[in-house]
Amino acid sequence: MTDTAGTSETADRAEPGAGAEASAAVDAVAAFIELDGVEKVFDVRKKTGFLKRERRRVRAVDGLSFTVSRGEMVGYIGPNGAGKSTTIKMLTGILTPSGGRLRVAGIDPSRERTRLAHRIGVVFGQRTTLWWDLPLIDSYRLMHRMYRIPDARYRENLDRCVELLQLRDLLDVPVRQLSLGQRMRGDIAAALLHDPEVLYLDEPTIGLDVVSKAKVRGFLRDLNAERGTTVLLTTHDLQDIEQLCSRVMVIDHGRLMYDGPLAGLHEAGESERTLVVDLERELPPIEAPEPARVVRVEGPRQWLAFPASASAAGLVARIAAEYPLVDLSVREPDIESVIAKMYAERAGA
Ligand SMILES: Nc1ncnc2c1ncn2[C@@H]1O[C@H](COP(=O)(O)OP(=O)(O)OP(=O)(O)O)[C@@H](O)[C@H]1O
Ligand SMILES: [Mg+2]
Image 1 (tube, rainbow, N blue to C red):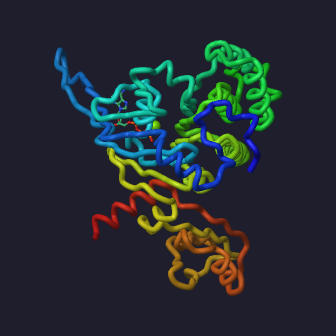
Image 2 (cartoon, rainbow, N blue to C red):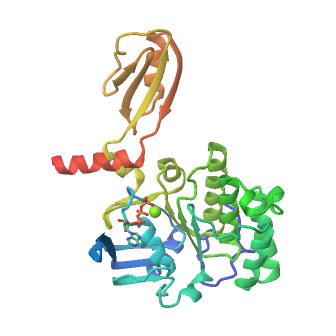
Image 3 (cartoon, rainbow, N blue to C red):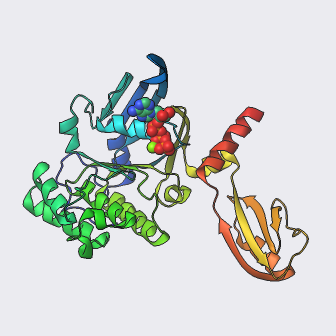
């Protein structure tokens, strides 16, 4: 872990270099993000005929309570429409809660949105905060002024982001000409120029290729380790969570369904990985050691499900020894199937 002496200008920022007990004590005093029975109800008016309108209430967030400590990196996951983006919008002050209590760094986001803006960074993967027609660097210059970032600090942060997110060759390119992955890296840099203490990421790896995903994940991991930035990460990619977050919260229908380590979620959902093997020729289903089993056969290709908690090595060795193996790959469980199984377990219990 790097020494952060030169970077922690805010007195109350957690010192990642400090001992675990010390930071735990700080955390106990200051829950950095606090939600207590937060609700968000949308009134949706739907036109159902000539002059006829139907009012429908959507309870997007329904009595949500949790806290996040300084320096934590938390995965915030759930199926489409679960209320994740709505939560993040309330945490930034874009939306006002319909009920409950919400604080970020002691600030009520919707009441003091501008004051909070100096302390938080947001990346919405589906949208950009950059100026579409301007070269990337011009957006950064505008943010420099908007956030009144001291010159030295701005330059230092910009240099760091440009280097680590590999933006050097893109700075003079208008944003609309950037690829999705390039733009996303540009957006992440934009969210960090003012040294936010907390970063909300709403699907930052959506649509990125494997290489770009790895770059973004590495960058976020370092940011959290070196600067102690608190990160709330929403994603549909379980590998983002696996590689970045020790804690994961699952939300569905606006309610918290699970809060704990990812391993616990796999257990709760009894999630499985899939080994896809290509054999030399069409064969009867592979006789795999329990609990692995063939779940699909298509010509010479077979799919075997096995527990996500188990290593694939033993299974692969066994198959390679007994069958004419040509190629193989392992597929991770996706978040939706893990959650679906979690429900099935509960319903069956
Ligand atoms: N501005 C709005 N007006 C009316 N309904 C809304 C509005 N924003 C969100 N909703 C509804 O609130 C619910 C939660 O939406 P939200 O965008 O928070 O889901 P999400 O968990 O981010 O889903 P996704 O994974 O698809 O991004 C959905 O039913 C959605 O239709
Ligand atoms: Mg969303």
